[in-house]
Length: 387
Ligand SMILES: [Zn+2]
Image (cartoon, protein in one colour):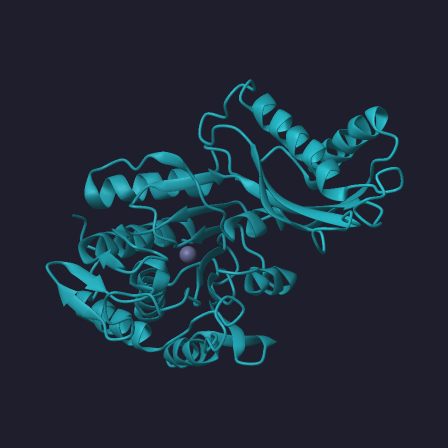
């Protein structure tokens, strides 16, 4: 391994401390503490190490903290981005907030997703603040709220901060994630006519009409299976997620509401999904004059696709080779991440981090050796990218 001297004991101590600070996302789990306490802990740590600190309030008990180590303005700026919130802890089979280090693994809620990444960022901050060799470009450490729910943290962050590149330090098993799909959540409200169940000439059954929409969604989905596959991401998909309608057995249902999720490829946009659904509704309407429905996309997030010749990808690859003698693979992820919002804001972004298991699961751990490697690789990346 290359000789970047990272204080391994401090990473372990910091990671354990971060796990003990409960930062469950309150939008996800009622009663979750939010990110204020952990943000203040991180902010105070970096403030003592020459970083300029800003807290961005998102809501009660919820905030981002951003630390900037200013270069001389002649080099490229790099942002490291990590989320401070975690999913809930009630179903955990280990002590969620009392971290244990055992057989090379650190157990606890958030150890893997992603307080390991946060500890690495803090130690990197300390390392470059203390380093005699100053960086030319700015090093921006962004610790954001709400990634596990609606990404309000990164949404707020990009209103004010930018960089020449960004690395989201989510756990990626020491591979570089350059792409993932986006998604749209939509609703289709189908209108019926409520009358007594005996009045078949007047009633319009919204639930049976919804069946036609469901068959249409199935047609869209099977159409996707015929598309050429994206090399990293496969194909788009759509599935019906929720359905509700009807009031009682003896009444024609006056409405039925369907909600669906459409996973998009990076070259697709909200508009694509809107048009797809509108054309489905038009088709149904053509064959059934009684059919009335409205379609609405109520939440949309773009996908991520960062070109493989982007300088930051080349720099991480080179640094990983230098530190571990292993060339990381450039891969796609199944899940959505904040990197898509950074990328949409014009910051070429990728994900790189440690390995482990059990994000969102009853037993969660991060592999400590991989976290040390992550930290050293990122240190080398920052040194070369911001020099
Ligand atoms: Zn995460």
